[in-house]
Image (tube, rainbow, N blue to C red; front, side, top):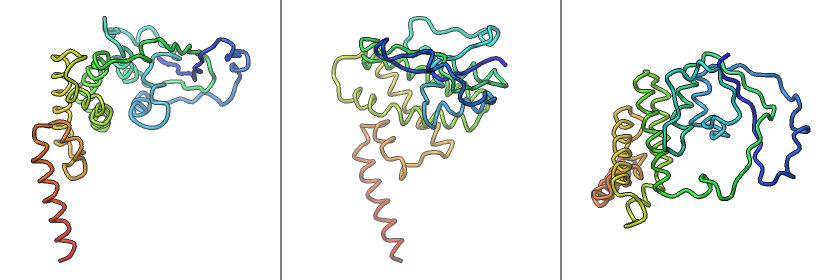
Amino acid sequence: MRISLSADKHFAEIEEVDTCAELQIKNCVEIQSGLEIESKLFCGQNVEKYISCCGKLFKKTVFNGIRFPQGRLFEDEYITYQLYYRSERIAVTDIVFYFYFTNPCGITKNLTLNKRFDEYDAQEERIKFFKKKRCKELYQAALLKLLNSAQWDLIKCQKWKEGFDKERGEKFQQQYREALEQAEKEGIVRFKNNYDFYVLAYPEKVNFFRVRRQWQNLLRMIRSKI
């Protein structure tokens, strides 16, 4: 066993936590594969639980050659998927062993667009990792994760004139375009089903996309009546 994963409890005031009451046996420990845990990075409840390194015990050797990136936010997102990939078996329990103090003034509660760029760099590395390892389903899930999670921040980049690093903003928009192109090659997105992705990736072509969608809708209507 190289990783053990427990439940956690978030609290804002110390009086809210009764550690003795939380430390009780509920269900037995469940053993899952690393790839099973990987899939939970992209769907289901408590995705943050699997992305974060909090509430986990790691065997020292699982970190061989893997380090948190220096000077980056969202640092867990850069490495947890790599740690899971290395682990054939992971012990999962719903016993609460980790108590997380929620700081209202903390970094994650005061995110700016510049800070969030680190998250999308981490997602880009994760996409490349799964592609290199030929994990097709995880690669496709990672692509869709970026396309869906980045939409609001991409709108901010395109509409705001100030307030963020322009070079990083341009890089972010390029990351989105590349993810869309790769997803299209994989056959997991199509213009008629994912119109918003295309408009966000190529805002300069928005009028063209609108006309194209109108023609497609018109053709579908005509075919349905033939």
